[in-house]
Image (cartoon, rainbow, N blue to C red; front, side, top):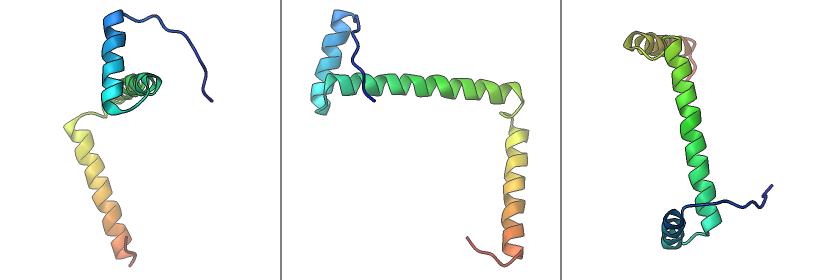
Amino acid sequence: MKANTSLSLDGTLLEQSKEVAAQLGIKLSTFVESALRDKLLANSAQIAADYERARGRDTDEHFAEAEAERAAMVEAIRADGAAW
């Protein structure tokens, strides 16, 4: 669902955004929506990274264990006669 809103923006930022949107061949609202989605995605990724880091799931050891588990699962599937 789309909703209309008003924003107060720095004049230079607004003009640059309009120019870039025009260069991309899209409406300003589409450009702004995309920029907001990018910012929200980056924020969510940072939250997820912080969560994983706090649980020690960002270490070389963790990734080695995960890779070993993946390889063992592949071998179990192959041993069972299954294929991808």
